[in-house]
Length: 71
Length: 481
Image 1 (cartoon, one colour):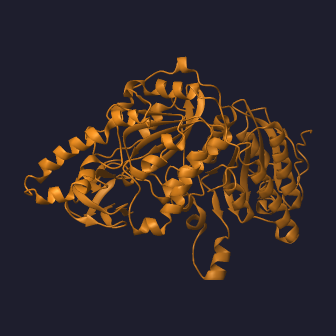
Image 2: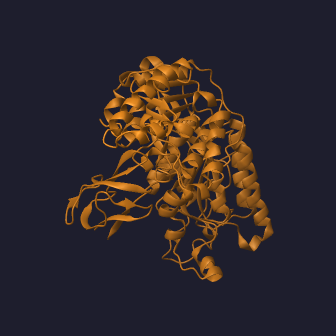
Image 3: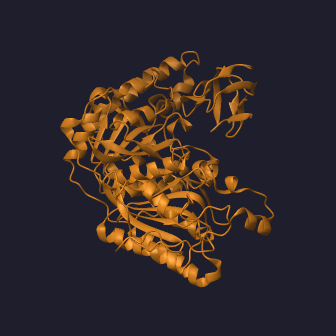
């Protein structure tokens, strides 16, 4: 099942810590967003394989934007 | 009253050779109440008949409680006049004894054949629940579908626990389909996903019925046997190890909350709903306390409309039931934006200000990293009547971060500076600003922070501060905000 990981709030993408095909464990940092002058890690809720990375460092994302797809 | 056990099984319930007899049915309320209460402690306080409800008195971990349970073996647990009287009587007994009441729900709602009589009866349950609110702890466990009146019953109580088969909705999928044409199943309409994450109806999600009853036992014991703080028995642990090195980096506050409380006593409420604030019941020095903590990992720990409402209800519940509060603050502010304004962040945020300002229980604030702006005020600040405000040595209490402040205060000056030199000038101005306007020294001077505590001695400092405060309790109900 494909799991969408989306942005909780408007933010800048500070860094992307995974690439296509990576296998991640639950709790792993997928990327780091920057908002409210803070660096906020986005963690994987469940383990899986990264099947799509929709954003790159420097992008601005809106609330609800899909960041990463896990399978 | 006497226990009325093992009555003959009515013919209708036992119909069909392949079907379980009512006595063997795991949904029989006697089995469920037995599983909830301490072994051998159950005393039935209503007849085991076909009223649709069964009530019992007993203990959980030695704490006296009253409990009632829908009878899902009769008309799907539907509630009529007789069944509702059982619940009202259970409430009267719990109120008279001043003990927690636990409701186990599995009911399609009011009994249709009884018409308005059943509506009137269900309304009487709502009335006594409201009368009991803030007086005795009320815990609901939803074990099967709970529709209509059976949905609003739990919703009026302090804490709602959802079993794996629990579904809560005003109207079931069939009615939804026939009225609006919307095609939806029970899981999506009223299961753990909608109520755990979106609606806030359910406080605790569980994966087995046994786990759901276990959580109810833990909560009844926490709220019903609150204990006294034993300051001498509080061991200190370093809570600072859970902070990241960079002050800009977000982190999960759960390990701090868990370590702040006595081991294995924490029960988090509304864990997946508004996760940017954490509301947890547990014990500190043996005494039940409620912890409210910003969680920087989610939304940077900002307050928003939903989290303010969640925390406000928790604070009011704790105040009304006499549970002291520990407020762990690391908050960058209120979440800005059109979505929030339209969502009523002003109206719903005001609930948190109101909840703290009216609270009478001892309530101690701990600023771990930062407390900025309006959110600083809302998180049990001195002005709202905090019993005591503690801060870790590196904490910051300010209107906003120093760099952000000087960008506003020195806008013109900075505009004239060579862009390449600007960051350097900003840092210098920020240091100057912190000396004059911010910093813990200033906060202590004006009396909004009482004491700087080391991360390694925080548990004992919190326990002391709570133990020294006079034990008071709010005199108000716990409206499900």
